[in-house]
Length: 306
Ligand code: ATP
Image (tube, rainbow, N blue to C red; front, side, top):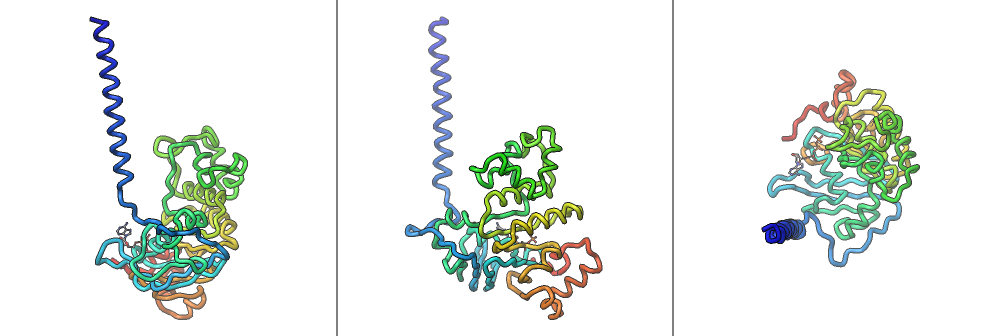
């Protein structure tokens, strides 16, 4: 009986293995056939990066038909400049950043980098020039060293640590139970919002992209952390074309241009002093912020767009 049972048992095991392989293949095909949000043109070439100028020309965009999120948005960022996007929650600031990284295609108008339409170049090539520091950084279930190295897989351990120093997270990592080998992510240590953002900055330092898109975290950070982050960001962004969704004044005051978004349109644009002199939305926001400095700029406009 045992002699008969063993092959049957094997058969059962193999049957289950084959069955699960088919299930895996099925889900693989599901993934392959899933519609991608954006596709490369058949003839798409590489982006020819020269100096890093960005142009939005009459951009209209909606996530769902009938609900326009951006209407006729036009602006330019000159090579090496820092442009800040401010405005109430839901006015479309983060959407502008997502569109530049081409997470979505626009409905009309065009987005150009160094004169080339980003919808006509290879996504990989476009994205190789752009570094994004998102509002909420995703950490993988791996140690913190590999999480930082994700910015440039070929980076050496020493380069990873240098990036961590520049992003002001090195000392914090050394204080973790296993230092750089400490596991983070869902199954490991939970890092705070400010710490995760510094990991994202370290990744960006390793990637050393030509264009930086920064979506400032809205979560409150203590003022020392805030200052440190601003300092490390200033180093990363120097001489790089930078587009930043700003929630804090320190970023805004020194930027080369401020775009005030309202209801998916650019309501005002100029430098800090120019916008103050206009005495409209931005200056109202500024005055209120002076009275209650702990508030974020986007709250300060006090104009809900939805
Ligand atoms: P905040 O300051 O709160 O981050 P924001 O100005 O960056 O806001 P966006 O995130 O660009 O605003 O969102 C603009 C609008 O688009 C909002 O009305 C939002 O609800 C909507 N929206 C954002 N992402 C999606 C999505 N994936 N699908 C559908 N609608 C979306």
